[in-house]
Amino acid sequence: MNINKIIEKTYSGDAYILEVLKDKVILNDNYEGVIVLDSNLSIVKRISIDQDLCIYNAIVIDEKEILLNCIESKKIYIVNIDTDEIKMMEMPDCFYDEILDKKIADNGNDIIIKTYKNNYFYLDTDQLIVRPCDDFAPEDDFDNKELDEEWIDYVKSEDTDKYLSESQIKIVGSENQYIYPDEDYYFCRLKVLDRENQKNLIVLSSDGYNENYRITIYKIDF
Image (cartoon, rainbow, N blue to C red; front, side, top):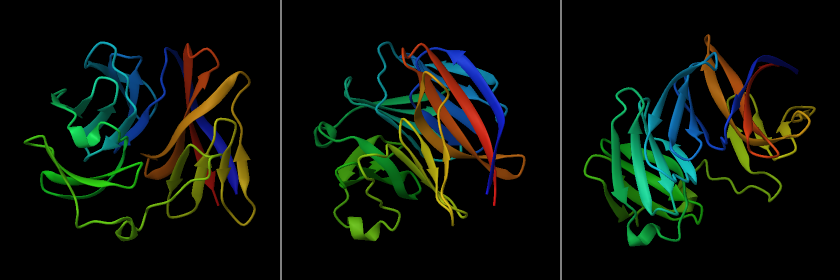
């Protein structure tokens, strides 16, 4: 297994959320909105959303829309990355003590969202209505994976599983490989990015003062 760093860029600011929509990279823009980057990690645009925006998690809805879970303000935002359209809904009572984890399935405007407590909800992304999903259980979620406390993020792809902690990334193989952060930096998130017809690993890291962040793309050859 060969791991090669192919692009790395450093920007000022506090970024801790990373998501990928097709060939676009999405980061939180400090506490005001999101930043959209291309697959070469150049900034395409910034989308302002709200002041004091604290995003607990981001969930990809489709190739254009991303859901932002903001616990402290008790709001959910759905942002269209192409048109900059923003939909906002007040968080329903059933979400007050929940952190949204990921999208499980969709059926038109209805998507099924899993929370970190292994509860499931329907979310109508058009009418912005949430209701419990009683006909879906954790055993029906074949991608449901409980992480050891050591790991804070995880991606599964066709070739291998990848785990991230603040101090290392483990790439599972016949012999596990590891990536370590640069000095004075710690890892925040990792995803898989489609770039030039290849699936690359993209990693977000931050300095110890949360004043600068670094985005790195790795090519992994097996």
